[in-house]
Length: 154
Image (cartoon, rainbow, N blue to C red; front, side, top):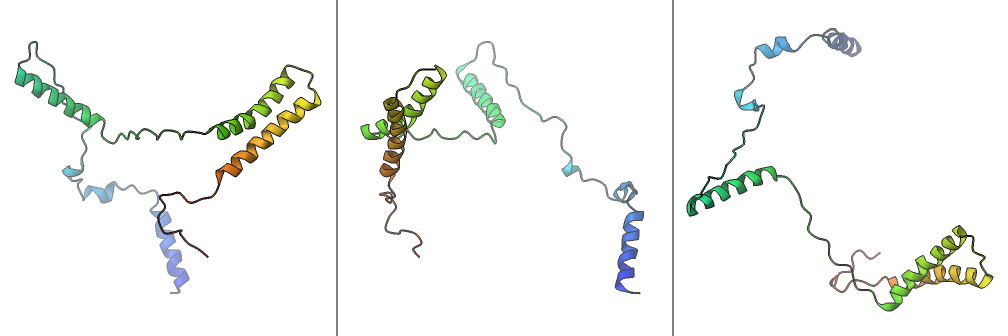
């Protein structure tokens, strides 16, 4: 027999047994009881008594906290974000110019205002100046807490 004919025979067996059910094979191997999952998870409900005593009230509170803790399992609550950095006056002016120039042009175009040449020039210059100011102030200095290692240097 050639390797090709062996492979063809294996494929024929696979295709012939494709529609067979798995019940024949699994009937001989019972499902272990440890693998069974209950249909409804059991939950303990604690109802407070009419007039709780000091010790009973503390026990009821602990039981309620345990029940609530089970529901929150796996729930991630991210920490609050760090505060935004404080901006100095030149940075604030650069942001205003960056967004203010195009905003003025948009409002003027939507309101059909007659725009003088100097107003158009000022709006475009404010946009470009704001962008350039922010890029120049951005810098590429290392952070102060980066330590002695600059990383990979080629």
